Amino acid sequence: MERFFDLNGDVFDFPYVFTSLCEKPLILKTLKKVGGVYMFKCLIIGHTYVDSAVDLRRRFAEHLQNWSSSLHLQNAIKRYGYLSFSFIVLVTWEPPGLRPGGSQLWIGLIQDTTFF
Image (cartoon, rainbow, N blue to C red):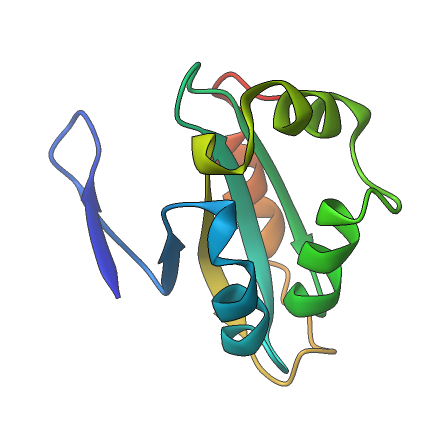
């Protein structure tokens, strides 16, 4: 788990943090059979994209292959490149088909910041 602190000093432990989209093979291997809430973060401008998926591996691959993905996110990835984005899994659940109600809380909290 990676540990992060917000401006108030509160601690957040995120299950998976990948510092670059260039880690694609590792990300795909790690997220096999995992569902959860995820975030793409542009390290250059600080914008984020947050969503949830019952299968994080499949959804991550769809984003990078430009299938059923946010147009704003795709344009930002093209503009800034893979090295400029981190991929963070905020919360996970298993089995991957299960999507607990708390996922919307995470999405709401994060989307209050600047996003794509």
